[in-house]
Length: 195
Image 1 (cartoon, rainbow, N blue to C red):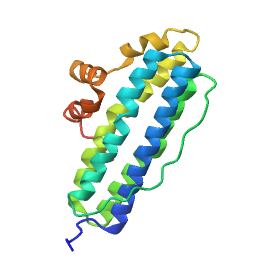
Image 2: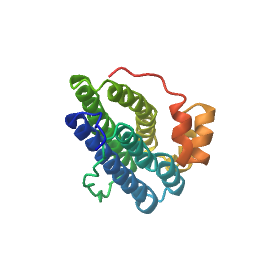
Image 3: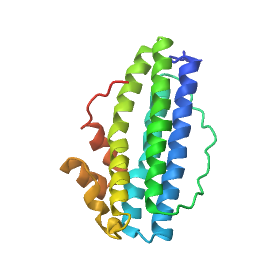
Image 4: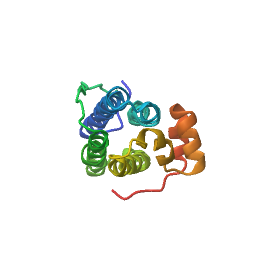
């Protein structure tokens, strides 16, 4: 058997992050279903779905890659469903913001702390790099949430959302035209974030 290069505790923390990424995908998918069907915001649905919800599985894969390159087998933990129906579209973005700030980001920080405590040096560095990738997505959700509140009494939010994708021109173009590869552009534009 090949030597495992990550401690069990850190590997378990990474598995939890991956689980949360897929939970985030379920939450984001449910948000876009609400935007489309309940609030009739087709353009908002398309942008949030392709630019945000599709990012979660790609992001999860980046954590699985950290495990695999260090001879650890990822374990796919169960994913929670997301079925909430929202009373207004601001609540959609509230849930995404809470998930990013209060659930996913702390779980990544926990994995980084575990790597530090267990002397998983290479893993800690890789996790810190992965953590910086989330900053742009969290910021995007916060912008959408703030703007959604401003637009609550204005039905133009669904049409104007394309203008609310606040990134550099290269990232914005890639995000709107090809969300599957957008993460590659975003990763090349990140700034390190302290945990």
